[in-house]
Image (cartoon, rainbow, N blue to C red; front, side, top):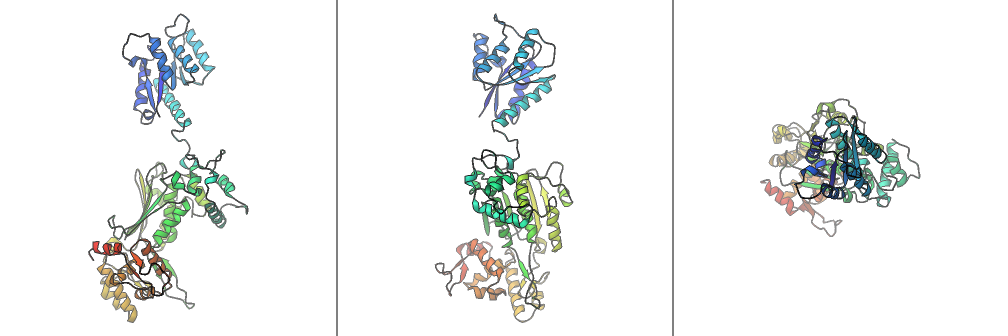
Length: 532
């Protein structure tokens, strides 16, 4: 939609200002997209009365922009000047009228005209051409705001859809209320419902429509209304982007659902080590990456992303790192160094941030980046990195298997978790073990030396084991040194099944005692493409 602006004034008094305004509107990156300008003096000469030319242009225009100064102009027999006649026609036709009055001594007739205008519209005073330009810019932007072509309110507070309470997913409301009660950041009444929650969060406006934040959190199908709100998760077996991609998922859900799905994607594809059992038979488990640090990084990306951008949040798991990217960058004046120290909490999307906080997803307001660093360093990992650029913000959490240590294999032992820092992979690992443990370590190391592009986690090891043929769950568990009911085994099998790398041999009867797992065609092709 474009709007036609008719500039009206005494031409000889404001010749420079008229041309300046026309050029400014046409060249401005914002105004030029929405406004066309009509100047009488730009029209070619023709054998037509001036009145017969400019008055039809007023009728065809959307906005009358009048500039009043010292001179009244050439009055007709009825005592009306062209500028006043144009103003009167714009009034009769119901046009939008913008009037700017210069501070100066005036012709008495012009003074009368100014008083007439003041009784009908709000006019803006100016002294210089620069002040006039700024005043016109502000007035035209206000028109765009009022017509809904540009947004004044932050994205999450704005209302860009027609979704109402009828489009709210009750299950998402119940889930949020349960999380809020557990987090205890706010007091949640026993009879709290969707109306109470949306009102409390400021996610519904008086006419019953949901704000953008309300849509993203609680709509039944949020991506049908705001399609850029997705999280893409990818796993790469190497240290850079390359094909084939073992796993690629695009999650479309409410904000909390996408966070939980992305977190499960990462945690299901990294190592989990089990310590030595104590006298009660209990053994401590530790994930390769601290779960709370991973969650905080994903929450930050979803919460602080620029929702005006068409880009998506991307969660990429490489062999040496987890890299999370989101559209947007840091507040003005901030650098990556700012994030390494205690800093003010400046949320791009304040309503989204508040909702995540109340649901227990914000560990320490204004300290999330420090929290990630503390958790990673406490687990012996390298210090995470933050890399802002003009359009994308990167968070990098390093894994223990780095490119520099690509030849140092860390096999998983059934007794003591991860054995690290092995220079001569096979010999050193076997030398440190005896009996069945030695056989298992040697098996692990041999495969991982042969397949250095395969991740050193349970899923990767199962994938390699099945290269030699189908195996049942018990045989797989025995081969990798875990119990048949181990959680890590189930997660690894589920991951490989989800990624389409393995399949059931008896898909019609999953509970069959003869059930086994085998590589799919995709899995075999992936091994072949790796040259194995």
